[in-house]
Figure (cartoon, rainbow, N blue to C red):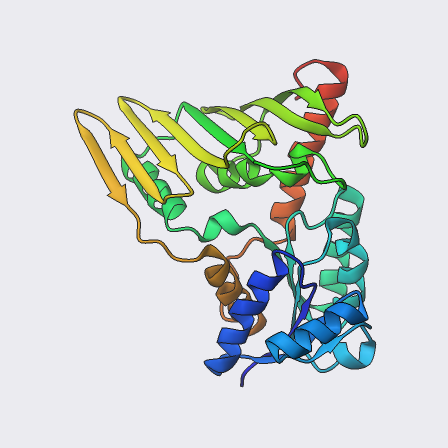
Amino acid sequence: MKPNILLIGCGNFGRNHLRILKQFHQDEKINLKGVVVATEKSQKRIEKIEHVSAYTELSDFLLEKVDGVDIVTPVETHYEIAKKCIKHSNLLVEKPLTLNEEELIDLIKLEKKYNKKIMAGHIYRFTNTLPEIKKTIQSLKEKPYFVECKFIGAGLPTKKCGALQEFLHPFDILDYLIGEVPKTVYCTRSKINSITNFEEHAVLLVEYNKTKASIEIGWAGKEKQRNLILRMGNINIYCDLLSSDIKIFKEKETVINCDYVEPLKKEIEQFLDVVNNLKYDYPNTELSLRIQKNINLAYKSMQLGEVIK
């Protein structure tokens, strides 16, 4: 049976979700039940241009008709919307799932109470590059002794959260590749937004059992960068997550050009598997909680100016 899916939010990134959901609807993989938006103007635009039913009220009557809800709204609204929806449906929520640990813990309790699942939108797990790198690490039977992550954004900072929350992807990537909880975290911020007091740029040093990682994140560049470097034994691995290129240096350079697949499409496909109870290995609330704990350690380190264990 095709699951009934509802999209909540249709802003800049939400339109990408809608495009993919419409395609899945046309391919008869789902029944797209509509889009919930904030204003009547958006409602009229979506119904006219996208030819999809749109609503301005998230009613229980609407939620009772769906099997999965895709939440792509401003981050500060995630918690309240998820709380309302989890009674009725499995959820896909864009990252960050919430902005604090207490709300995450509450959502984990609600998952268990209502026997539903919440999948977090950690999109880099759905590239073809990270599984290839993980396969290489496993084949060498050793973990990298050093990892460097650079996630730099172009444009203006968001107003609702700082760089640690907006660019949390390196924490997810390290969780996926290293498979450990950090032993220590040290974080310094080099630029603060004078209006919001959020960090615009931060550099972190994170230590695991056998791996040390350097992370640079923020709105510090004119161009978007998503770079990953791993050093292990006599091998260096360089990855550009934007181009899906991997370069492995040992005695000579080896280039792996991973076939590009749209990560968001793979992410939503896995959510449909979650809705249909076909897969259980997905970015869940426990992962989101581990990442939030790392972010909390980073904030504590910034405040105290010291390494936090």
